[in-house]
Image: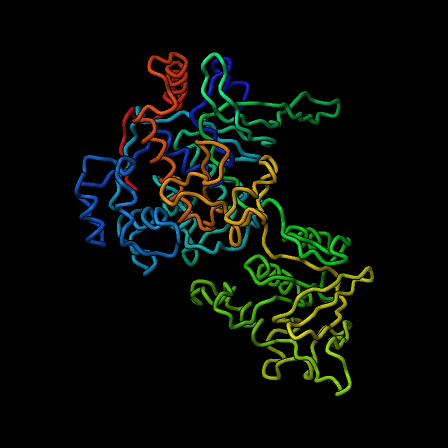
Length: 546
């Protein structure tokens, strides 16, 4: 979608602009496009209290009901009450491995639609298009799906069985892109866009209300060169909106250790840099070890990729292998055998420092077995598993102190003992931060701790739990959802979409932000509906069973 084509009226103010076209933005677009959830008259919910509450006003859609009231008494794996509610309605009792039918039915009601614009750097699906394509996702396949289109049904049409009830990132990315097309949402999506500024716009003397101005660049394909290659150009855009939704995710900027030598060329901060080195033939069984720093799933993927090539691996991480907060201690072994294997490696083949002489200082320096052999000796590892996973050595409760130009890394244990390792590459895979450079001070004032960088786990954006309104926003009409507010899993970020859509629908019913007789708003709605209906290939009103 070319943003130039979105210019319906000069100076128009769009009702909603969504920044981010990943699953968060897609799900919210679905709800804002007139797809409305109701309690099915024939269905029941395994939670009798919730079913009773939903049945009190069955003629009302979920968007019209009191979400706070419905959330009372519900428990789940998310700290967001609306996320737990929506997940319970879409996937009842899924945490227990049960496959209950959702009590919701989806009706397409275009009169409820709210015109909106979804901005994204790439195709619909967001960061899923940049993820490694062959490994299985962490979540079960049905946890990754969006309302109205069963992922398993879509995959059956592709003639592929979902192995172990999980899918690959490439399949999930393709599903999200197909979802936007299947649900006729394309007219609301502008891809190839980079937002550079979001500011509060004061009201004008002519009576225009205060709003948000979203500015950025859109990549467009230009003319062809003599060799047949096309040239792309970036064209500035500026749109006004009553409401802005931050849905950018948190995978834009890799987290850094902040230690000396971290910018040296052999130090990498993404899994893709490892893949690139592998594709160039730089790593094999004769290479010096690869140092992997981190104990998350991306770090585990890197360990598996290197181990698959028989490339030796040093694996350093801050936690103990028995720490209950370690993600591997939270995953069922049968569903995640590859990650269970990594956890076994971490546990069974730990580096054991030789006891230092009595007169040594606390900062004792040691070097693991010779890099030429890459095999830990019995004096430096757990003696029970020397040959279980040859070429792998873990360093639990260690941190990196320094990277040196000669490709040596200094590791320090939590007791202060230091070890120097020789490596071919170092991969620092300790998470990522969102790119909120378009916000004042990179969005820090919006976090639960305004003095720290926004991050999913440590400092999410603070929002109202039942509306997802940003608490510290410069003005009304700013929302945040998804990983930005601490929801890392697709199954739970859908709750943010419900909270925002419900609040916007309530404000629309109350007439907030719109003068009676406002012809500009009426014409905007008419033009948007015309585009929507021309894109529809099905009946004017349909029911989509979830």
